[in-house]
Length: 256
Image 1 (cartoon, rainbow, N blue to C red):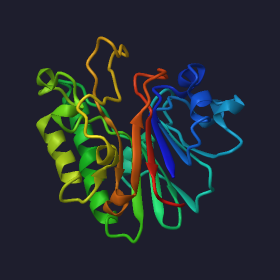
Image 2: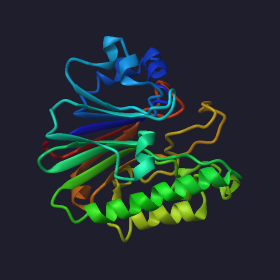
Image 3: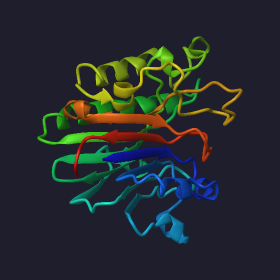
Image 4: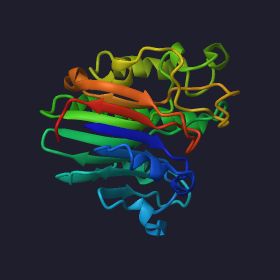
């Protein structure tokens, strides 16, 4: 099973840059896209609805913000939107495809700005709720893969020149401790790190210039513990630039 995750920062712009042409050549079983910045009914071109996939969208009611999508080669048993977070769910940050033995989600975590207490508190609330949700579902008799932009660089090796960013949201100590708990006591795993432990693997360049600007690894496929032995391959695709984020490709020894 191949899953590709990509933070588009505007799906229409990414399409013009060739994202759909590229991704349709990858033979993925599941494609998770975040930060669409578009409503489904505004996507008129057939490129957004490939014949080989069932396409599902969760739109933000506010134009040009958020939005997530999931493309499935095999029709899922059910689609879930939101995580039961009340007002936070209106922001269109999560969509999930359920199969017999596994659930696969496309997730867009909130970002925060340095010095902006409201955005920082908003992000903390989201991750506090997400922690409670993940603690609850880990006891279910199914596996989970949550793919997307988590807006956190977990470890020093996940951030180029990390020493310059220790007080910047996305690399705050509390955020990294949250990721420690996620991949520790909560029992989830960073799928890419099961395959690749290199320190120079980044998925996001804030200013888009991958040659000059500092890279961050903030895009993950977080897997339940039972999926850990299934990880076969992981790569970050950097040959073409569709947004400031690079697609994350993971292969699993798992049949839907």
